Image: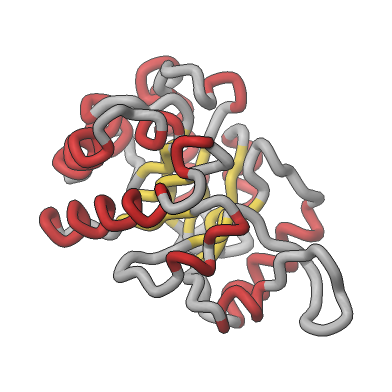
Length: 218
């Protein structure tokens, strides 16, 4: 699994998101790799008809109906969205909400990616049986320093923590991944995929960097 979080970067604003999605679709098809994209929240509907999975960057514990300003899982699904990041380090939520959202996403047959900051959280939330646990040390996010190089033991320990839950949850590696070499290192240490943001979105040549990452996924 190769997940690209666009955050709220200006590089992806307006109709640029359409160009970005088309680039991702092309690489995904060429290398036969599952690549999912999480656009800024207000743009998910604009690219929901894509051939690749489109994810929300955040989802709320809220209901359809007279609720305002919340991202409702059921409505995301009706709009063609495949799933969501949950508890990203830039949008942390309480444990009870994480548990409720993982259950709701499973009920709706949507992808759940729970972001964690350390091995302890990886072990705790893997027990909820989300589709993926993405480990991202906050201090390395956007730093250009890959966790696979700076803290390789963290990935090994996180992989063991996730597998100890004995369910279908898989580990994704995030934070500071900026090259194909970083991707290869993450996979070799036990990660089943990557979660990246600025390393791709802020690159001058999207096609080149996404292909570089894709080629190093196996």
